[in-house]
Every structure is written in structure tokens, then in C-alpha cells.
Length: 260
Image 1: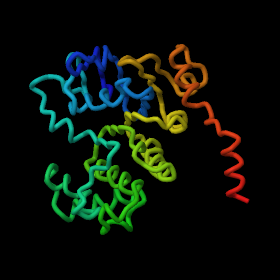
Image 2: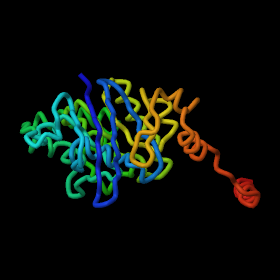
Image 3: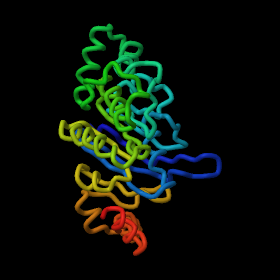
Image 4: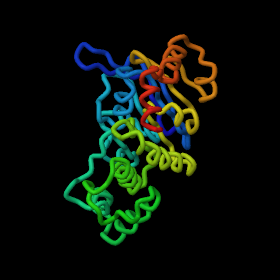
């Protein structure tokens, strides 16, 4: 049974059709990376999976449960889905440990000792055991995002959704978050990842999905999509995002002058 099965998914905001007939499956243990230009519908697709956005039409099944069925208990389904957003969404007045235990205690009804134990284990998984008593304001952006991942993992999800988890981070902090995600992939976590980190998608993804204009233009193994894309639109996008940034002669002289 597929972890995610999406069939003929449409989503409109007023007269603007953002998703125009998406068909996509994600198998257990797969890491599917969704890439594409801004405004192509990537984040909307992700948010439809757990009904943070309600589809206009089509069907979505998660672990065999049709979440688009009006009778679906979406809160029950969401308990099996971890989601990490662009922004960290941590409670500033709570410590790191409290941020990781609050949903466990309120949603899963775990006792304090069990919730603390699970929080400690997952903070260890993301390399932040020593920050359990810190507050979010005392952490870097990368550390805050790793806490957000630990919080999601503490709920024992079957599926993790990542919506551009590094886009709000300074470049030097991106690597530490991607390292945690690589570790999850190696553990066999099923992941649907919207990302602009092409190197990560090439290295970690089981499958890459390229979206543009609200449709899936192309999908396949990373080696095929990046190395030999079938569609002109995919080639055009990859050429633009993978082409090395040009540096003017003046900038080179300035950099040399600063480093000498």
C-alpha cells in the first residue's frame, strides 16, 4: 500500500487554479523531492496532503485513508504525519524540551516522564541534546529548525512532509538541517520534500518531481531528471538554477583585495 496516493488533484484560490490535475504516489521508505519555480504549486500540493489546504477536487489517500472523504477523521490522520515548515513555529516562552513534549502530552496523552524520554531521544537524533533547557531565542535558525524536526519526530510519524525547510536559514546553517534530513532518509523515513536545494535532491531523493504551472512536468530518478531531462521546460529550469553564478571582474578584484 502506498503511503500517499494523489489522483487528479485540483486546487483553486478564487479564479486562480494553482494545481491542475496532479497524480502522484509516494511509496513507503521513499524520499520524493519536489522541485520547480516559485508559484508552480509545490507548497500547495504539500499542504493539501494533510488538508492544511482543502482540495477543490480530486482524491488524496494517506496510508490507505482517503483524507478528502468528508467523513475522514483528519486529526487522527495528522497524528501519523510530521510536518516541518519554512518557519520554525516554536513557542518562544517554552524551553526546547517543552516545545518537543507539548504536543506529545496534549495530543498523544503521554505522561511527563515518557514525553521527556522521547523528547531527549529525538533531540539526540538531531544533535541538540545539550540544548534541552534553552529557549528558542538562544538558538540559531538552524538549531531552531532542528528542534522543529525533533518535535515532529517525537509524534512517531509514518510520513514526514518538509516545505522548503532551509529557505529561511542563512546559507552557513543550511547544511546542519540537511544533514539531519539525510539521516532520516538513511533510516528509511518516508519523506515528501519541497526544496530548492538541488544538491540534496540529487543526492538523497529516491525520485525527483519537477512541477511548473500547477502540473507535474516530469518525474524520475535523480540521475535521469538532473542528468538527462526529457522535457524542454525541465532542461530550461535546471540550466538556470544549476548554472554557476557569474561574478564580475570588479567583484573578483574586491574579493582578492579583501583576502590579501
